[in-house]
Length: 169
Image 1 (cartoon, rainbow, N blue to C red):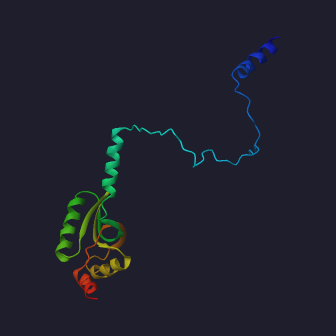
Image 2: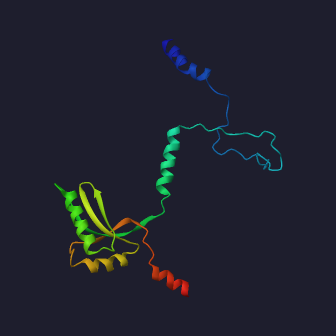
């Protein structure tokens, strides 16, 4: 008696809350009508609209994203790293080396970059590795430990004599 009462109480909620009968076949038969759900020729008389509500911070985030990605003056290229220092006074050491380089090579742009825990001095904005290797050969005597590294670079300024040659052709 207890056993049958237990079984009845276990299955009674299932029976009471069961949904309508469904077709439980794995591969149901296709219907005879190959008609699409919405015929393009039929006109829909109910025009609808969608109202989106979003947090205002999402707009701020999107504006920051567009601002950061709209700066087209940067691209992937190469730079030459001439120094990497860490520890006490590393920032001042890197700045001194940067100043020394800019005095010796005033036409080559140089950058101070911080990547935890190192301050790095990188030079140049080279689109190809070949351009970077050419500059590396020029400075190798002064900076024997310099090496080429991939980096995000500023767009190099096109030299005037190149544009004049194009205009004369």
